[in-house]
Image 1: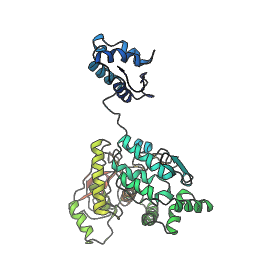
Image 2: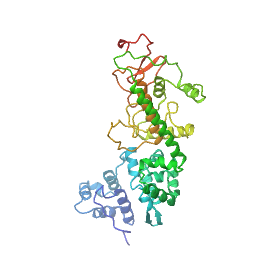
Image 3: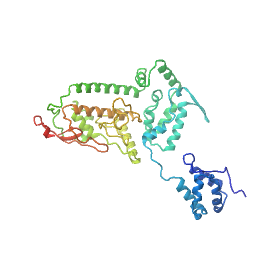
Image 4: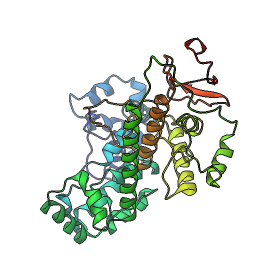
Length: 412
């Protein structure tokens, strides 16, 4: 009777180069015709001589080496960890983006078992495998889409699931993308200029909308520059910009704005109060936090899809990042890098970047318009400040409103 079957497996215990889980499956198959006692005797011969695995086996108690169930339990405890190392969303996105198509790749093909495929289709299949391997959450699909090169991304609309992303990438017209790559190369148009040029040439709705939003932000930045030039000296008594804030619950504020009841431009202090009270706190970068984030983004898209985020429509924040208006980098959500230091982290979703930029402008404008800056703890990650009627924001904290004529350093 043949006691073994299949290919003889071997194992050295080199966890970076071997798969212990697969080895044990192969052992079960190879020794399937053996009695447990014979399995125990043969098992030691499947470990490479002089290896870490053989040393581990020799140090086991005799009772463990002669009991197949105990031997299996000891092997799995040693070589197959029960706890999988957690990986951050940022690192996971970088893993998923391995071999992502470049513009030159879009002009090429890959030979596979299924035949010759356009590079972007081949890469979509690779991405599908990685998502399954790392069990990536649905909330990362849009972040991966945004990291694609422009000529591919413009053919893939905003997605909420991996299935939508795979299908959209595979449906992208290779012929049209090649024409666009050649068009941009012939005119020497860089990646940063393509969005604007694409919209001018008749790009998608999303790209045109983004161009309009960017122009709006540029105008806001110009206004901010003018405000800085006209800011009062810190040695002068700063005037109060607005009367005390009325006591309005956030839900009433939303409904009032939605119904168009207030068409007047809010004061900077008022807008910052709304940012502070309505902004969502970033969830922790944990399984529960990521599930909460997915639910928040789905709810936001259902309520406000097609609109830009603002203090009345605060966009959910990526787990593990800083709150808005807290000296955060608008591109990655962590601490600002300072001028001349480019952001090298994974970019946030476009809507979240827009929301962080808007909140940042509001916070800067409020600090320059009639508010004396003082020292104190800044708005910290994981906390939320709720302004009450008759308060203004000073240095990241809320203080009682002081009517005109009663202001002095002692009041603060």
